[in-house]
Length: 374
Image 1 (spheres, rainbow, N blue to C red):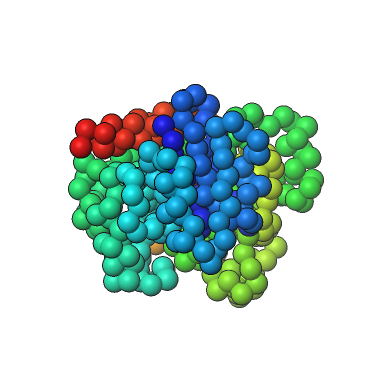
Image 2 (cartoon, rainbow, N blue to C red; image 1 turned 135 degrees about the vertical axis):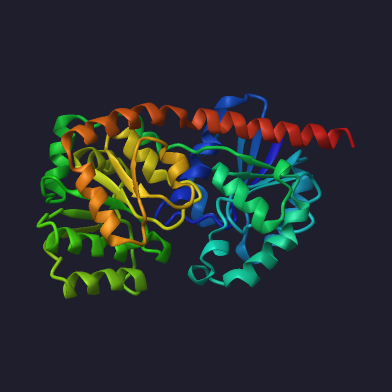
């Protein structure tokens, strides 16, 4: 099977969740099936995200201003059996071979005010392209249901395939490495961690309000570590800084910014717990990362989060700082922490890149086979 992979809107600046999905999936697809060949359609800044000189992986560099002129002749020249678009809103019209797209979530339908273009413009985009998809991949049953309901794509065309944490989480960090990370980032014992981008739905302010409730009502001081890149002009990031200043939390909250992937397992493992107050997730990779790093989880009860966390987390109403505070007090108990770690280890076993690739390939084969019968 010869598969064209549309990576024209891929970015490599901060290796976010979508980039993790793409790079890990492509690597596993090649391992899973020796009869497939992948043709990666890339712009030059992203070429180094993928290895050179592999027999069954070919990188095709496309100039950004010549995208449509270049792609259609190359689809024919490469004799593609399938066109796969794994990145949000990167679709192109009139592809002459069967087409599969990944839609990771439909955040714009739940919180249109948080997404550029809001509801009408984003829905119009999907309505334009959705009829051309032979199948849609997504990352949870929650997203599958939301896509069917809000984008009016037939549910039988949508397949939920779980992701996994990055490969670096396969090895539990040693005590020596964990101590090194504690010193490297000047971490305080007993900290909670929230790994997240600074986007409005990530709900940082409700979490910080919960810290104030814990301090002022329950006389409990919880050190908090925030990771995630933010530019200085990011409004959410600025609101976090302002809140810390106004509520005298600057000494309690350690903002690390972007953290290299190889340091993250130790950051989780050293933490007392991970707190995840997001209002909406299509999947929620940090949940799986925490489970695999044996870090207890206290998290939001919204979006896909309850589905992915299962029984391996204590859940709260993310719009109620008092409820967040109460659940933080609960997760702080040693017996419940131990229970959540054990349940997290067990729950994490259902997530693997091998299974993600296997299920994805099954969808590819089904679509190609269906097309051959026409």
